[in-house]
Image (cartoon, rainbow, N blue to C red; front, side, top):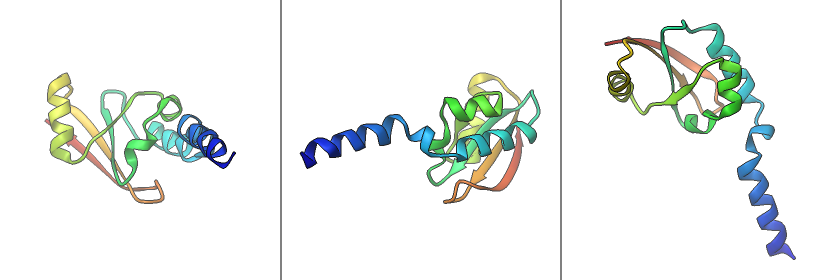
Length: 104
């Protein structure tokens, strides 16, 4: 029985994590207020890739990409031929520590 309950918990933890984490709305709204429409948006930092989900994109009113470093972001910008970008660096609490605008 414990084995079965563990898998139910695991299923909900993975598939419904966005309902448990209110940071998606907070980060998405912050991105929406601090970006220009011509910029590609990146998040970077510890566990930042877990914030990239439909809920964050909805509140940010745009797609958000993950980058490991500014060089990684510039590579992705070159790949999509977008000259302007912005990186939101997040800390362990998924709060914005720093914003860096980058240009090709």
